[in-house]
Length: 113
Length: 113
Image (cartoon, rainbow over all chains, first blue to last red):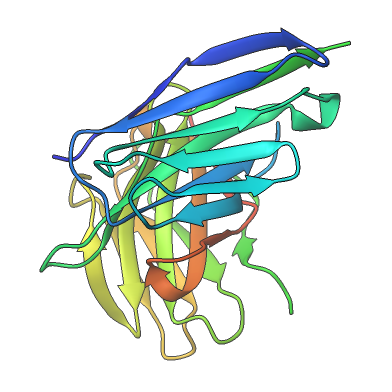
């Protein structure tokens, strides 16, 4: 079945450093969604990418969808303590039997002062 | 708009018992998806309901079942609980199924003793 892997599993940075998490799917995706889960919280939607090669920015966050629509990345510039949490990508595959949204394994980000 | 609500928030059961969890989606959302979240396995898709019909199902045993009512509220049931069923159960609602942004509830923390 479809698998979505994320690397790294954990990342520990000093405040002000950059951070990147990578997402790779075993199958071509219709779209990819990114979510953030704060410690003790629930996943919160960040963004959705649909087009091949698409790049979207949200303040310090830059999201990219690969040309082959099988990989994606999230880059945070100059991390802040408010960025702490686990970042998940979720790849959507359209099938005759219904859409299948598969979450990646997540990257846990810790930011030290 | 009120967010996604889940009840109960915490539950302790013993092996062999059964449990029913409830999820009320955002008003107007007809899609409800259920996920199991554990530290080792991440977010695993259980099933998706849309307008009272199960549209998609993950790779979980038949002990896990669900349903959706005409008001879009959804329940999931786990029979013959096992220790490994201890997890955070999250439901998410969407206006267009899983194609777009998923709104997650706070989750139900199930502990099986």
